[in-house]
Image (cartoon, rainbow, N blue to C red; front, side, top):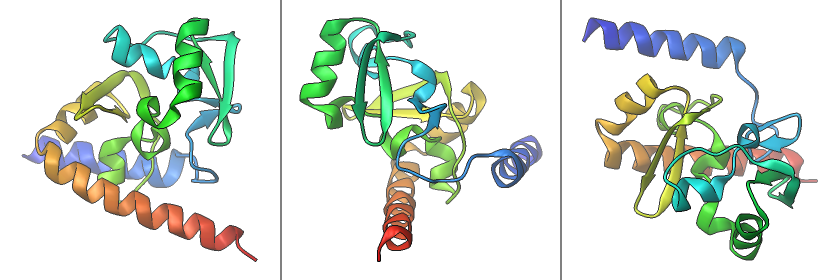
Length: 154
């Protein structure tokens, strides 16, 4: 229990000190979503696959990279089916009301939705109470998106 608390505090410090701010709805690095990984591949291949700029698509304020034309077209026709929850930000951090970056290998598909996490260890902690963490993350995400919309309004 003590190690878990220390780990959470370290995540909290990273989130407050070293994390990106929520300027748009999608986690990007240099404008490319989720480190350039193909979101469709998580569903079709069951693993993270690096995408290519050759197969890019613009959606949700970001450029998404795909392994091939087929994956790009699947995403383009139904982005909500493949887009990671919380814009690709860490699901566990979102369940605590924070934003944090994600690692491509720290992922979960649950109820047909893709969730990304900061690290494998964070993903394991998040998965211990998956239903409650998703519920609270959904609530926090809705608040953050509303706040973002309020700031850009008028």
